[in-house]
Amino acid sequence: MLRQPLVLLSRSEKVKKAVSSMPVSSGVVARYVPGESTDSAVQATRGLIESGLHVTLDFLGEDTLDREQADYTVTAYLDLLGALSGQGLTRNAEVSLKLSALGQALPRDGEKISLENAQTLCHAARNAGTTVTLDMEDHTTTDLTLDALSELRKDFPETGAVLQSYLHRTVGDCRDLAYESSRVRLCKGAYKQPESVAFQDKADVDRSYVRCLKILMAGQGYPMVATHDPRLVDIAGALATRHGRAQGSYEYQMLYGMRPDEQQRLAESGEKVRVYIPYGEEWYGYLMRRLAERPSNLSFFLRSLISKK
Ligand SMILES: Cc1cc2nc3c(=O)[nH]c(=O)nc-3n(C[C@H](O)[C@H](O)[C@H](O)COP(=O)(O)OP(=O)(O)OC[C@H]3O[C@@H](n4cnc5c(N)ncnc54)[C@H](O)[C@@H]3O)c2cc1C
Image 1 (cartoon, rainbow, N blue to C red):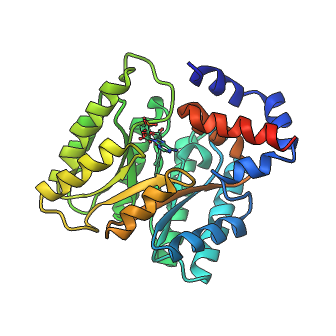
Image 2 (image 1 turned 30 degrees about the horizontal axis):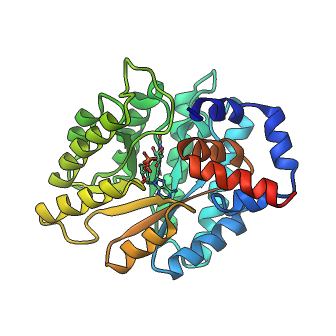
Image 3 (image 1 turned 45 degrees about the vertical axis):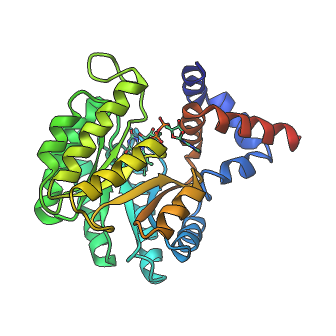
């Protein structure tokens, strides 16, 4: 019920200005986004790695419609990769990219520009000793993103991709991507999508997630189980056992600030766990998506606003 209003709020510049200018906002935001700077992201990365976790970092921003912004994003990732490598963190930390932040939707040559930008970053990641995973955005970009993935994999076969179980097509995409050395992050999907392409009912999205997991766990690739859902975490573990997968031949992934105790519990039981850290100035839309997904996050947000007034 709250999802739509919050998603709409996330697009309002007025609300953004109001929330961002409140002194409290930094405290609330910090639970889900460690900061706006490279330094804050690297510091959070170091802390998680020291507690036995792995990390993937996302420089926030999407739907870039000007070239300068796309170039700025590339520079930010290069800066990040340099800092991670300089501090010896790239064994346990990689980066996640949104092609729309690299210029995919630019009116002229957007696909070509975003692919070239992604190639630059895959190259820098490899030099730094780490990898890139392509985030998945709304369904109108799924084919473009998978095409970009196969282009990138020609030179950088270590590049990973995200699939979203809410899309009807995803079982087929899992079959296509369950080959050796293929890294697939399976999530439920975060964008509002039409009935013609996506399951609308939570139970259907979950059933699809399990069907997809079965294919990925039975396949030759490297499944990345991105969910906070306790039932799906258990099912993933059971499927890994059924298919004789050793711990470390797949991994769990959760978002920064979400179920941190569970992240630790899984890591302490010997599982590989990666935390997705978003950072940067464009945190507002990301925060609103997280609040929309979970009413208890929303009440935490409202309580923080009230208590600090
Ligand atoms: C690493 C990672 C990368 C992602 N990348 C993408 C991407 O590229 N594209 C995309 O569209 N989406 C992405 N997502 C977001 C994803 O699609 C979902 O929107 C988001 O993860 C919420 O779905 P869920 O699986 O956690 O289940 P939900 O259906 O949101 O929650 C299921 C259950 O999990 C438990 N739970 C959830 N959150 C919490 C919490 N904070 N505390 C305690 N329990 C909780 C509750 O029991 C809840 O009922 C990513 C998610 C992760 C974790």
